[in-house]
Length: 212
Length: 124
Ligand SMILES: C[S@@+](CC[C@H](N)C(=O)[O-])C[C@H]1O[C@@H](n2cnc3c(N)ncnc32)[C@H](O)[C@@H]1O
Image (cartoon, rainbow over all chains, first blue to last red; front, side):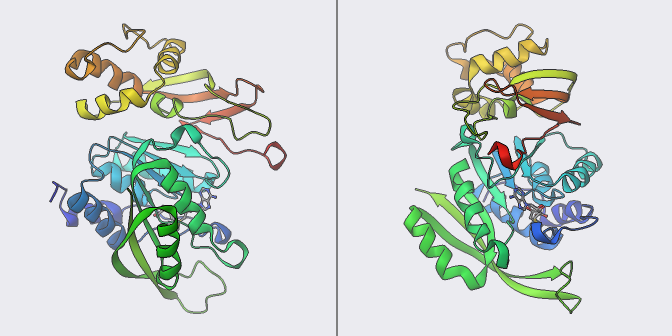
């Protein structure tokens, strides 16, 4: 076990993250719920010691739920990569609100901006990637491959449970170790017009990938 | 944007650019923040940094102070040196300005501390 802020305190910090104002459906913008985000981050730090004193990246950092959470857990620096200017603005407000300075944000398209000098540079990469819809199926796998390039150690990510077989196979062919740390039920808010219900539950797996 | 981040950004993603590194800095607004000093982290980062690029960046912002031009020997045990590196790499921040591609002159604006590395379709 590694030292870690109390789970309850971390969750309280994440509860006051402001959300996307006008979520963009194509970018799959929704905040990782504070309950889920705090449990992920708590596990990453308390079980594996992969946040405190580390260089951490968050791919698709959005309003900053995971970025700020990792900064609160004393990452040496968290670099959040995000494509959308509106999300970045909200994230910046959240960062100011939380009074933290161990964060840098870079506006870029993670899929196109291959920051090659960043390769193998990060200790830990976190992400709640877009899962991909009809028009961009497999985008979470592309995020995963990029994350694995950036990290020299571990990647923590969420993927739909329905794709588990595929993800495990892909990880094997990439030569990385993949573990499902938890199965979660994620209630996606209906920022998605085509959802008729108020929210939909989807099953997601919380993964830890490690380079061997 | 911190100089640690600058040390890693490139413009290689632009079509036709071969190295795209280091990005030149043109800063109109620089600030200094305070970050907890973690000697192990700084020691671990030093071998990963492009030192001349860090030095040059700090110098161009007028923040180089008495940072040595070369990495010193046994830096792991020199707290004074590690503190200087900590300061330059994490506490000096570019708030507004531009990063400039060394090959094409393409500018990447930094607004409010955030570099915008997005490219147009015809640049990729
Ligand atoms: C599911 S949200 C997660 C947001 C945040 N990390 C969190 O945990 O609350 C996915 C984020 O990825 C961003 N995104 C989508 N495609 C991207 C791309 N190609 N490059 C960078 N960011 C992207 C979206 O704008 C959105 O903020």
